[in-house]
Image (cartoon, rainbow, N blue to C red; front, side, top):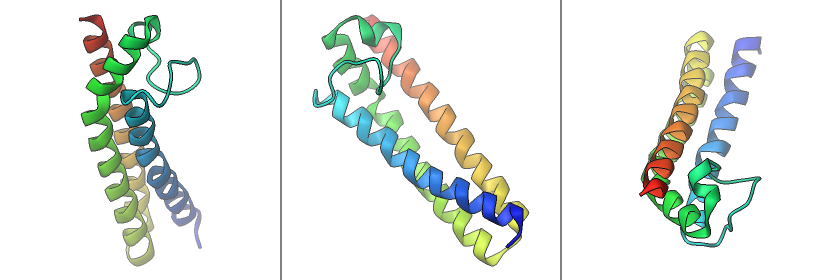
Length: 119
């Protein structure tokens, strides 16, 4: 195995883990099961100000978290398929796109939470 293949597979596994984790944590906070804290969840000024802001902000972010999760899982699976059957550089590129998508999704979750909690 070459380094690109190993890197692509590792990043694919991270995407397969992080995508659903983002959705799960957002959903738990949105339904009140994950209390306001300074460790996990969408921790922006507005969501940390009150328990109500915490829940409402996560509710607003939930559609973005769901989309991010689904896309991360899809790209993770595509990365593995391409890595095992095609050019490893392409697989590594897809894996990096998955990571960029996760970062962008997390930012969109934070923006949605901030806007809603501000209202």
